[in-house]
Length: 492
View 1: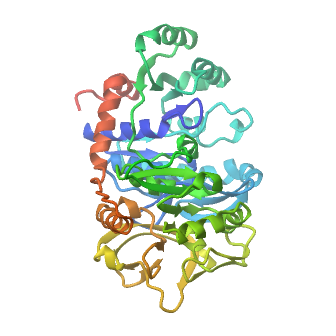
View 2: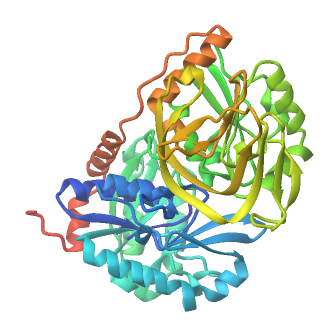
View 3: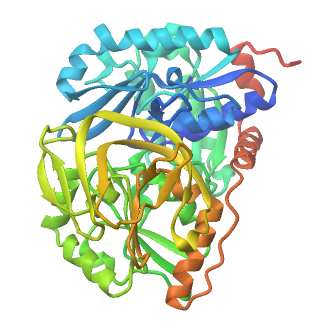
């Protein structure tokens, strides 16, 4: 089990690397995270929703993702309220205190059930913790860290982030706040996000080993990761005030208060033709070539936030000046003329007028759509390009008369909408920018309109990324010692 001294220390990436390592060693391996709080989710082939990180880890492990890999997913949607997803399906919206009161009595059971099923299917389980195992105010009802390690008698490796400073205090503080039995379970430290000369770190590592009696198993250097980030803390490093220079396309993504599935835009960030930035204020917007409204966990709330902060006028004016506007999921709904949540499905509810850039209307309903999808683009410039991805939404959106759909699914149904001039489009399809041919056609279309030559780069080979991650881990961490700790036979 991989636990950390804090959130965003790199647990998910290290688990991904370990999943790939054991897969390459010939083991049947699967990831597991009992309880995940994240707005980045993944839809399995069977239509169940889990944390994005566990979906990625399953890909690295060469195994199909199932809801057992993340039996509980919490998706924040308001002040101290989260949507609770159990075994891949929407269970309830629940305030934090009410959920906390029921964790041990109700939530531990689906965790046990998932662990039991996975134990029958795989040889190696790579378990990811959440946050820190030493949160004193939460520890007595924590079902994501040491309690899970105890359930399956797993050795624990603690990951520390040296980039943020104060690492040694964080390590010792975490270790000291564990019980004696929990400390016995900790078998190693992994230092992550290191920059500089390792020789300058050696004395500190020796002190840490002597102080805790726990060996340092490796120091991982900072590298550019092509793995989707899980934690919203990753957004803090994405500046919004640096506009594109030269012939690059300036792409501004509005950072909504309850932004979700921001991993949708990672492939776009990798395109050399694009300068992608997240903007939080109208002052940061400038004059972008493209504005993207992402998904959100609370559409009505975030639409009201847009109105209160001058975004409605700013986006409409940018469109009139020639900007392209894209809406994904909740962002698509906001591009329409009206949104109705009179049943308070997503939050406080109500009826709100949208941006009016697409003649569509959205009604929120209790049944959540979660499914993988494949279809073809219907826009003239898209030349029937096939795309795939997944849907996660509660809204039902209807197009007005004469409004062209953006996509037609393989089952014949239609999705999304595109304006007559092609400069505004919206869809429920997450993962749109993962489709290489779509990005190529879309950039060509925008380039022609703006007098730019925008060549697209090939899509990232995800399998190669996982292989590179495993090699990065083996180069800098004593993986053989980890295997001995786990009791794995070296001659496999």
